[in-house]
Image 1 (cartoon, rainbow, N blue to C red):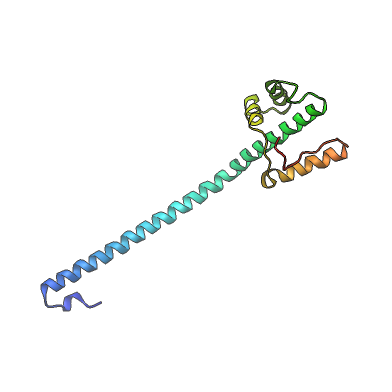
Image 2 (cartoon, one colour; image 1 turned 90 degrees about the vertical axis):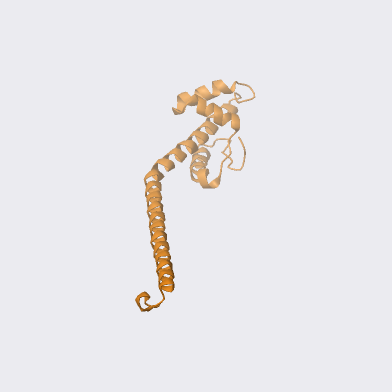
Length: 147
């Protein structure tokens, strides 16, 4: 870039100064915007890191609710007291008393049906099924079945 002081024509000098000012402002504004984006991203990552254990705990409780409910429902089926015979509300009340989870949460989950995924439920279901097999129970929880 040429030195503005060396330019004799005042109009050209003024135009060059305006252009330099515009470039400077763009660089500064871009830099500020970039810094704000980086700060925002860092803040988001820190908040995500803080909340991650809480979110994992919430997900774990939801997984345990489904698996516990499904397991108790399967025991009731084994006794001939499943959904076809008994009121779902009474079954949800029993599960609530046994597990300590909210009767409404159990009822809502049961009404929607249980879908399991290997990613969220696979390890726990495998452990439950191992225990069921050691106890020689006539059923296991099928991860691909909708309950």
